[in-house]
Length: 438
Image (cartoon, rainbow, N blue to C red; front, side, top):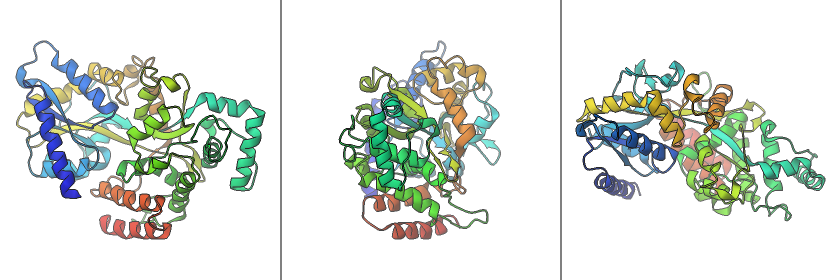
């Protein structure tokens, strides 16, 4: 399977190279398939159109598949690839890739505060330009929730479902104040399988594919129930009530038909498509989806009907996983001068605003974000949620962090799919993490 994936990625890489601009001499490896790709392409288009830019400094984009992306990147960097000059990097992978990257000095930073720049720093050195901040929003159908909060018949059914689920009646509340219990009852209420009068088929959309990024989404629930990777003494603590409660919560929603049956194959794109089709009431999803989900031209079915709230609150608080994505310099680059010019331009207000307006998610300085706030109000929310609810699992920036995410994805999705028990999933995860984080 691994060999087949690597061969597939190699084919994709070759295809991307031949499809790129023939005159470009700086190649940027970006994150594929989402708003980050769209934003990067737009930024490159603007940069390449600048007067006085030499052909040697023109930029092209290269994209791999999402699945296995980080493993392939490490293999390529470790092999000294010259296929790209600038590569994507992330907060959780800097320690893993820094030996193969060259620190940079940003001489023209206008867009980012020091705290944001720090998401691309490792051992005191700057390894990238932080173009995207990623965390989670709870998206919901505002028209459906408004009716739930005001319709007496709907409230009566909601209370009955709450009584059946938790042994007590509960009233619907505004999503801004949801607990995970409120979210669960709401998801059940809007599931046709549980409530035949629901105007939509599903109450929520869960991303349950065996993919490390789906673990990051789920971690917002795990942390709310007290889950962590390591305790203060460095001991692995995943085999805990916190992890158990959050895992059971997802599985119970899936088994109850609150999320589409093929959610076990869902990640970012599939979840967005399901929610955008207008047949789901809620979805915990990356903030990057806000632009598309609120764009009437891309999702006309739900146009004007999408609300945004923070992830629900659990017994231990309200949390969202947070990390930064950015671009850094490949140590083996054959055009470091041209690459540095582009990286420095990415940190200008001009580039950052263009990137944001094309769908990217930069955490901008206040004097910069105000220029795009009317078109991208979610960027203000992004900064607010990061400050109030953002977290990184203890051990989540270690050199083996990505492998830990992959282990959790394999074991936990196996449990959700009914392939193994919860006890076995937690035991297997704990055993692997003890080796990876020792």
